[in-house]
Length: 443
Image (tube, rainbow, N blue to C red; front, side, top):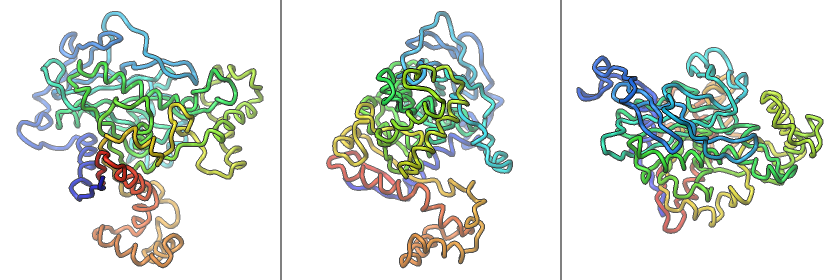
């Protein structure tokens, strides 16, 4: 299968995000966003009422789009695989975002100017009972089955949420493009990816429970999305940065096969699942940091998240130093069950062989790194820095960059465009496009 590369395809990802992320001016006289006064908020007891396997939910309508927020899709005990949520009686109000999964907020705020630009929504309630999702749909009782797009948030496997940024609101994308948009919260960091397999058989699946949450959310979509005007046979998963990494991971998870039909990765790169021989040492090191024995492992379920995460990060630092592997951290693990194959293994590639993939990168994604010296350097200084990597090929790289981005004024863009996600994205596109008889990869 050939890798398909066209300029028009590069624009698609940007357009998807643009439509989803910005409430722009009118695009046509029929566009509901051109005359918001004619599309009031409707939050009565009947209009936005629909059903799920667990019970009835009621949302609201805004600008012609049905909004449902904070719908539970799973429940779980600490470090255990998720289960379907408990059913409820009556009608559950789903008009505001549900709790988000615990993170270390302080680590996300780099400086005031950046926070002013990004406007993180860190004030949402954080609870471990955080496995809920949001749905936006142009219609729920009109007989249509629309394409479904499931958004996986960024933040690596450590931070983020379905409502972390105002740009994650799916109303615009749903209303403008006539699609059903779903976004989800799932367990992160020490709660979602702590490997306790070497400590107690009870927790042998703990290393990937955060990804298992996402699989259960996709099962929820298959079972319920028709009641929200969506087509369960036309589901696209898409995500940016860490969310794109989750998209790639799902393409290697046998339990996710059949739950989605297309994939979009925005600055994700090639996944490299962690070696369980090393990640299992993190679980043991965590016990050591907390002064606990293997027999006391259940006490981990009682320790407050902040304390547990701090101990987990210390354990990671310890194992990183011993293994001399800076890649170790909270991330999916090659455990032989949820993830039985590494990227590039023919058996692993076969799992998502029929899934068309669109992959690209976000220019200046790490512009927040602009406080590092070379990001403020002159063109000559940046080129000198590039020579450390490209050596004799530096001039060719600079010429290619200037041709591709003739209007770029920041010399540091020469580094940002290639040093972060681009190389891994190219590698992954090549891997997926080389699968014989496989679906196309677009870049």
